[in-house]
Image 1 (tube, rainbow, N blue to C red):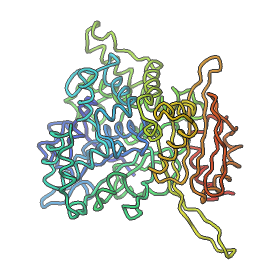
Image 2 (cartoon, one colour; image 1 turned 90 degrees about the vertical axis):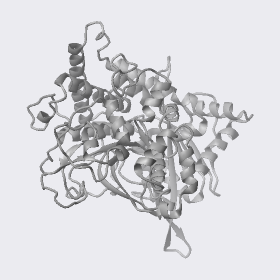
Image 3 (spheres, helix red, strand yellow; image 1 turned 30 degrees about the vertical axis):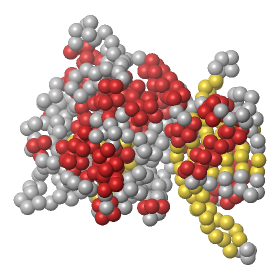
Length: 575
C-alpha cells in the first residue's frame, strides 16, 4: 500500500500538547484549526480525533509512545469515509485534519498534581526534553518555572482517562464547548464534574459516543463486566454504556492477543505493527513514523510535503524535533537500562537510538546557531546524565506513595479461562481466573518495611499480607503476583529480581503448581529474597491459599516474559 500524502508543520512540543488537549472542543470550524497546518492550506474540520492510548500500567513507555505518535501523526490527509462526514458539494481532493490526542490510561487520576505525584519520572523526562538547560523551557506554551506552574501547564496539556470521562459526561449535558469551558473553569474542585455525575440521566449515559483509538504498548482491551463482557477502556466503557470504540491501529511489542483487527482499507493512515523481542514500544513507534514518512531523517524541504512547511524555519523545526527525540529517548533508555540490558536491546532499539541521537544533535547545532554563546552554553547532550536523572526519579517515586499505590503504580491484569475436571470423569467445565501482576522498583524487604511503617502493626508478616489481600480484594483477583526489579549497593552490587506468587482461590492451585514446575528452569527460581532478614511463610492450603517467594536468577525475564508463561500454565497450555 502506498504511503498517504500528508501535510504538517512542526510546533514546540508543549504547544502541540496544549492544542491537542483542547482540540475536541475548540476547533469546530476550519478557520479555528490549530497551527500544525500551514496557514495557506484550506481544509475541512475533522470528523473525530484519534485517541492514542497506552496500556493500563501507564508507564513511561506507554505515555511517551502515545505523545510522540500523536505529535507526528497529526496532519492533514485526503478526506475519506473514515476521516470526515460526507456533505453536499465536497470535492474529491479535499483535505482533513486528522488530529491525534495522547491519552494516559489512568481512570482515577486527573492531570496535574496527582499525576505528578504518581508519575514524577514523566515530568522529569518532559522537562529535560523541552528545556535546554535541563530544567525548564521558554517560549509560548512552555514551562515557565518549576513547581506549581509546571503542574498547571501539564494540567492543560495532557489528558488522562479520568479527564476524558469528565469531558464526555459534561458533554452529554450540553454542548461540547460548554463542557470544555466548565471543565477548565472548575478543574480545581471538580464541582462541574460532580454536578454532571449527579444530574446525568441514564439516557445521557446510554447515548452513543464513537471513539477512535490507536493502541500503543498493548494490543487488547480488557473485558469489562459492566460493558457486557466486551473489550473496553476501564473508566470510560463502564461509565458510558453507549461508548463505541473503534481500534484504528496498533503498535506494540507484547505477544499478539489477536484482538486488534487488520483493516488497512478502513483506516489507511494508522499502522498495524505487533512485534515481540523489541525492548521498547517507543522504538517501534519511531520505526513506523519513519516508514510512513512522518519523521524524516533530515530536516529538508526537498520532500514535497515538507515543502509546504515554509512558515517554520529549518533551525526551528530541528529544535522542535530534538525536543520530541529527547522525550522518545527517555522511554527507550529506561526500558533498556541505557541500552546496557543486552537481553532487551534489539536491532530496532539500536536503530531508533541512532536516529534519535542524530535528531538531538541537529537540534543542539540549530540552537547554537540561533542563540548567543552565553545563552547557548547549556545546549548540549549527555545521554548518561539524561538517563540517570530520569532513572533516579523513577526509583525514588515510590517513597511518597502509599503501599496500595505502590502495588498499583505499574500494574497489569488478565482474565483467563481454565478447564476444571469434575465428576463424573471425562466431563470438563470452565472457570475464569483473574490474574494481576504488580511491578515495583524496590525489593520485597523494602515493601514489607513500608507496610509496617504505614500500619504500625506489630507483626510484619501479618501487616504485609493484610495489604496484599486488600489490594487483591480491591481488584477482585484470584491470583496476585508481585515482581521486583532493583539494584543492590556495594559490595555486592548488581541487578536483582524477586517473584512473589499469592493465590487466593483454589481454582488457581493446579495452574500455579504447573507454573512452579516450569518456571524453576525457565526463570531460575530459588526460594527466598535478596535483601533483609524477613522470612515468608510458604504455604499451600488446599482450601485455596498459596504463597511462594523466590529470587529470580535470570534477571533478563521481566513481566513481558513472565506473564505469558504464567497465563499459559494457568490454562494448561503445553503441559
